[in-house]
Amino acid sequence: QHGVTLHFQAHPQRPKRIHKETILNEELLTFLKDIGADNVRIALNTGHASMSGESLVAVIKKAKEHLGMVLVCSASTDMCGQTYDTHAPIAGSDLKLKAVAECGVPLIFDAVYQSWDEVYCNLTAMEGRL
Image (cartoon, rainbow, N blue to C red; front, top):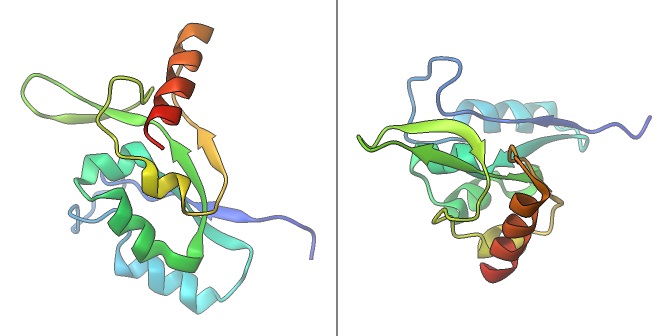
């Protein structure tokens, strides 16, 4: 009625979750179906999806009509293999973004950039993965 859309963003580490193997658990999807409102959607964060180990194709397929936007960034992995939510640029990451570009929702760069050069690298990385 007022043109406002609310986007929920799932996170694999907050709050403490039982189902860390999936970023979009059935509880969230059932909640969105029960609400049945066109202006309540999912904001998929590519960095959060990579932290859960789930493919972006699988997450997009699971979200279906509830997907409203994609926040594009990368998580960081340390030398011990632990993954951290750093909202890093996608340049230099191994994210596969073709499915993201084809999902038909707005893409928003959600990384923390130190300079405009990093923004440019992110743009060219995004173009190269489409």
